[in-house]
Amino acid sequence: MTKDARKLGVFPAFHKVEGRRVVVVGGGREAAAKIRLLAETKADIVVYARSLDKETGADLVAAGAEWRGPWPAGDDLRGAALVFSATGDADDDRAVCALARAAGVPVNVVDCPELCDFYTPAIVNRAPLAIAVCSEGVAPVLSRHVRARIEALLAPAFGDLSGLADRLRGRVARTLPGPAARRRFWARFFSGPVAEKVFAGELRAAEGEAVRMLEIGPNLAGHVSLVGAGPGAEDLLTLRAQRALQEADVIVHDRLVPEAIVAQGRRDARRIHVGKAPGNHVITQDAINALLVNEARKGNRVVRLKSGDPLVFGRAGEEMAALRAANVSFDVVPGITAAFAAAAENEIPLTLRDTSSALVFATGHDADGDTLPGWAGLALSGATVAVYMGKATAPRVAARLVEAGLSAATPVAVVENASRPDRHAFAGRLDELHRIAGQAELDGPVLIIIGDVVAAGAVAGLDAAPATLAA
Image 1 (cartoon, rainbow, N blue to C red):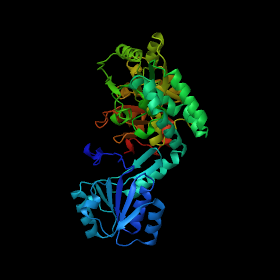
Image 2 (cartoon, rainbow, N blue to C red):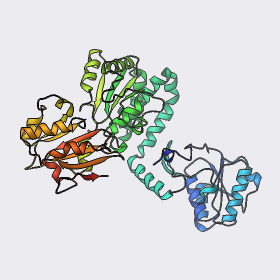
Image 3 (tube, rainbow, N blue to C red):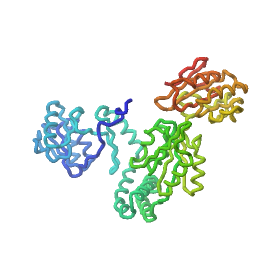
């Protein structure tokens, strides 16, 4: 998919229609659907139609709409907020479209995207909260399916919560100085005890809790969240990680974290790239530690975004030590580590009864010397070993394990960019590891899985020739 394919052909926006005229032209079933949709708003609905079928007439009465005549003139549309044309006749729809545009009013022509100035989204109504789902007119059924999923996720009480926020907005603006303090208050408002009371139906108690929070004031002390971004797929990011990104003032991210994950933070959050490549540490770990401390001391909420899990070869231990020494509060948000993603998409059970009851996370870097890596004994005893960052050391790892007594026929898998669209995965034997890991197409982060469990994965009956596990 090209970069432009990810760009929208529309700009999502919400029209103000309260107390304004919205015109529907047509008297059939499609017009009835637009009248029902508009009935969920505070618009003044005006209908023009040569005749109304029974359904449309009933919906018109239920919506409190006004039937003004068979056909609008240009002046009838001037000053309207929106026009919907649902006549069921192509020539009539084109005529309505021309009238609306001459009057300077945006028009939507049902089932005719090329004549539309705007599209009608599938709407989730939790007034005053509204969520609109749009497919630019090309897949309205898909929009409705997505809306149904969102409806299931959002309880009707979200409307009560947003209504309470609306009532308090002016007071919050007067009480709390500056956008940072207000943003901190609202983050706690929507995810803390106020929201819990609203969802429990205790609206008066929720308002009292909100007022108490406002009187106390938000905690303006800085905070750092060490967040695991997962292996790269956007839908493997945890809900807690998404929430931390949305609340962050500053996002400090690694080289391997995809832009699509970083973009899930607030648009106005400051982003700082501190990526390190093997042998090219432009920003030292000490400098990163100092950066986290300094940003938190300014009162910022900081997300330190790391690929995979921050506690698995992510240097989180050094960062936690620096934050403790500086007396800066922090928390850790775990992420899905590469070994789990690689095993899942290639159907490799990392532990298997009667085959392997132990799992080792290791790094290939400790195989640079002449001695066996520290985890070699566990591999010899039958444990499954997941070797991170192991491409460069794969030949030495394999040779030393075979020399130490591990069977040359031990199954291995080599997985690059687990969970991402550009992933590659190959299987083979331990004595082929140097050839598998050395393939030209493998130029991204590589994870190696060593152990008999690989034989139970997506490729059965492994032989000497590397076999693709997953495209």
